[in-house]
Amino acid sequence: GAVVSQHPSRVICKSGTSVKIECRSLDFQATTMFWYRQFPKKSLMLMATSNEGSKATYEQGVEKDKFLINHASLTLSTLTVTSAHPEDSSFYICSAKNFGEQETQYFGPGTRLLVL
Amino acid sequence: GQNIDQPTEMTATEGAIVQINCTYQTSGFNGLFWYQQHAGEAPTFLSYNVLDGLEEKGRFSSFLSRSKGYSYLLLKELQMKDSASYLCAVRSGGSYIPTFGRGTSLIVHP
Image (cartoon, rainbow over the protein chains, first blue to last red):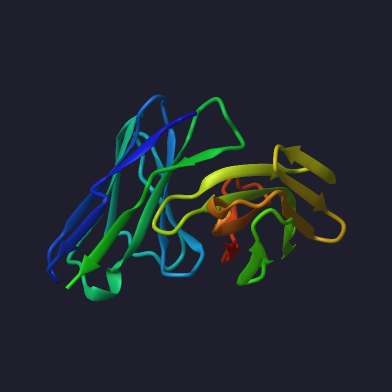
């Protein structure tokens, strides 16, 4: 099956710093990638949809200047949490749609962010 | 918007059968997904239903009734490794992006 990787898997940073999370589709081209956020025992909340070569579409309530998304190639999307604060601590998961498959999205292993 | 409801937690015995229900309210229903998520890991795809009826895949089956806004995931011959959170996700309207429910935490004990 299709594989999506995320890096780093875990990051601890100081308040005020920026953190970049990478999402890669390893064996397929992903024209669309999605970024989710998940709090403990809560649902996956879609943050934004990332389309290769164009601007990301953010969900209501998600600050686009705080969560910068870049989808520069068909296999890579990055999420940068700028000026991170403790309330940004969460589990961030990306997923990718294979161009030829309409019904399935493949999830990355997630990145656990802890902001001190 | 969408309203997706599933039980928060369920427990079951190894070897038994468990049914996890999901009810939803939405307009323009366009598919329902079930995902399995182990703690600290990403969700993995289990099933997709867009028409009424039962879809069987090995030990896992998923059922959909569009008129009732209802689905269930049936797990047979439970194994300890089936302990996980099971997420129901509904797609609607013109969007191809599903909305996730809170998930049901299933605990399988010996």
